[in-house]
Image (cartoon, rainbow, N blue to C red; front, side):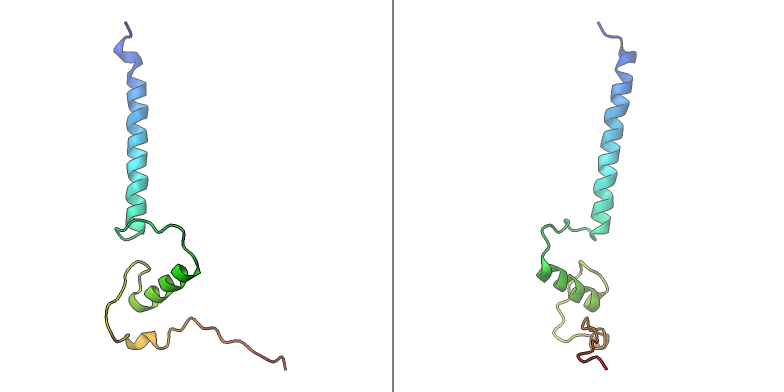
Length: 86
């Protein structure tokens, strides 16, 4: 028969794994704004995330307004570039 004192460290280890897993899950959930994390993001998804960021100031929040806010007109992602070198 195994004395219960030998099983206490295993119980502590199992509890700490549970605490760490729950903490990581909660941190990921908070980082994503309460939504499931996005996986397999391609260029289109990244472009839409940037657009959502400019529209709503959050990556995961979307807007259903038919007219964009005024600040959206000046927050373009197009960068100025020179065509000819002078």
